[in-house]
Length: 80
View 1 (tube, rainbow, N blue to C red):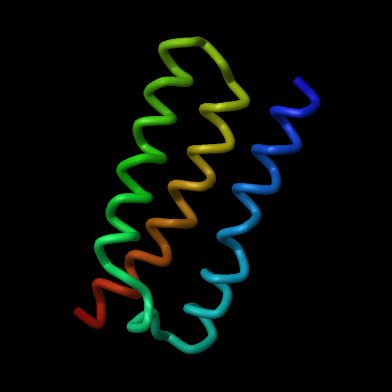
View 2: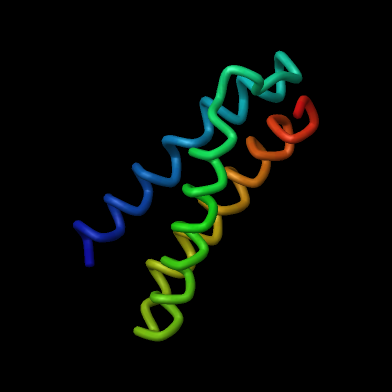
């Protein structure tokens, strides 16, 4: 559980600097829309998987990750 929690924390936190940059510059035009859509879809599937396995660490970490990715996606779609 400790390794899973650490992995969840690190992978979730990895989205924070990108969202911060998008927030500050109000731009995400240099990011791939297809990559962001694939990432958001994959993270949503991880949430479903965590729910099926009743694993709150997977669900919680990926819910936060999805919120961060959706924030980045918002900036990207705003420019599209």
